[in-house]
Image 1 (cartoon, rainbow, N blue to C red):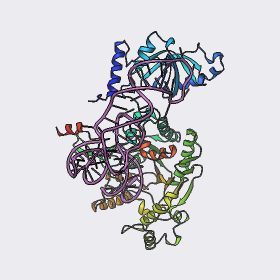
Image 2: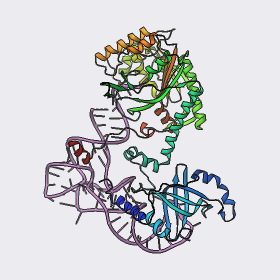
Image 3: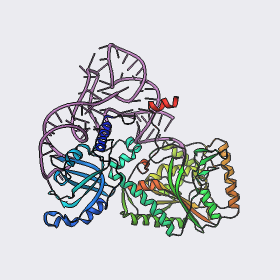
Image 4: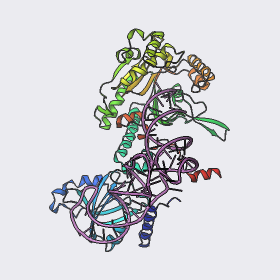
Amino acid sequence: MVFDNKYIQLRIEKAELLKKEGINPYANDSKRNTTIEKFLNVNTDIVNKENKRDEKRHYTLSGRIKFFRVMGKASFIKIEDESGMLQVYVARDNLTEGFYNDVFKKNIEVGDIVEVMGYPFVTGQGELSLHADELRLLTKAISPLPEKFHGVTDKEIRYRKRYLDLIMNADVRKTFKTRSKVISLTRRFFEEKGFLEVETPMMHPIAGGANAKPFVTHHNALGIDRYLRIAPELYLKRLIVGGFEAVFEINRNFRNEGMDATHNPEFTSIEFYWAYKTYKDLIEITKEYFRYLFDHLDLPTQLPYGDLEVDFSRFSEVPLIESLYTIGDVPQEIVNDKDKIIAFLKSKNIQVKNGLNLGQLQGELFDEFVEEKLINPTFITEYPVDISPLARRSDANPEITERFELFIAGREIANAFSELNDPVDQYERFKAQVESKESGDDEAHEMDLDFVEALSYGMAPTAGQGIGIDRLVMLLTNEHSIRDVLLFPAMKPIHTEEKNQQEEE
RNA sequence: GUCCUGUUAGCUCAGCUGGUAGAGCACGUCACUUUUAAUGAUGUGGCCGAUGGUUCGAAUCCAUCACAGGACACCA
């Protein structure tokens, strides 16, 4: 039974009683004419008026009851709408006869959504409140809310029943408003820069653009499998070939991998591609993007993140190899010597896989000794070719690529490079990927001949970047789990006995 | 995938070395016309995550499973 809980039964009975009184517990004719925030802002002068009230002003407000304090013939309730919380004074003698005792006190309670009409006044304790001359039920809540002081803190309930979390925790609502603003500002920023927002397929015949395991689904009409996209990269570059010179896409990617504090199977990123530009231009636009976000979010440039303090006004640039000894305190004389790096890693009790090349070993050193020390925003540049399969080689030094990753608070936030646009080189790199897939790397890229063909028509020199929106929002809201910036994070289904029985049938 | 920790009333949590299940809030009843987690009195409320085992006796000990959180591994 869905509603067999005794508390729910009791509240259903109340709803039935209300129906008998001729009161619809699910009314559909709200007369609300302002919000709580506006009411509180417009009536700040009431405290200076005679008797601290103005009976000529009259408002209709709605919201969910969060507090219910009955004191005999008068009560205070607090109602909350999206904009704020309002105290309402409800006295027996101001309402229709009988309503206060028979309806209000008996059948209306915390959790219900009500509409109140009345005038503003300031209480003896100095709180601007509404003096109600009418109160009506809009929506009966038949499930009781969690406890009013502690709320819900159980993470499982908070994630599985996000609506309860949102009802009970104002700071959670704030986090998701910030998230929404970040996405909206990101869109505006790139539009103002002349970028075109595009939508590319979510279902791909070949899962490309990153190294990750895809989700597979089936298209019945064509009788073929499709992959949920792991990245939009290869489609966005096709558009650059087609002549669009600045495109971006803000959307979901799907990766069939583990879940933890920074990984959810579906996550949001922005990718943008900019023709006739290089990664140097991307560094500049990234700095500008952060300034834009902070300005419009009214955030100070110094932000706490856990125990850390991040200064978003100080972006620095360090080549990867240099960062190893200037930031990671790795002896400078070993950073270009495979054997010495292996010996060094072993001396630090770090397991080293066999067969790694120099670039991969430098990447290991970076991950172990540098990454977590990059607190203020840092562009790590000049990545080795060995660990940058999609990036264009530097013309000056073919061992390194025109690439950077942006790190903040010890975490990667963005990945960017001047794009590879040599179709023959791209073909060869795909072939190498296919070989490593055949030898067991199930995350290696598949051959995408259609994309190679697109490049063969000529893609202008282009720079492209991806930014993980979820991780960015985590930074800006001081949240430490990706689940706290996703409204509905992925959760395992709960197996109840009822469901098991259904499955057996 | 591995390890650690947790799961007790609608919610937040106690419950010792095994002996009939506890509090606060919420809810019911009563009192109370300016409260701020209102207050006072009183009452209802539990398959102690699931399944097995040990025991005269299990919320408590053991095993397996489920879910969650954390760490590590893997992964951008």
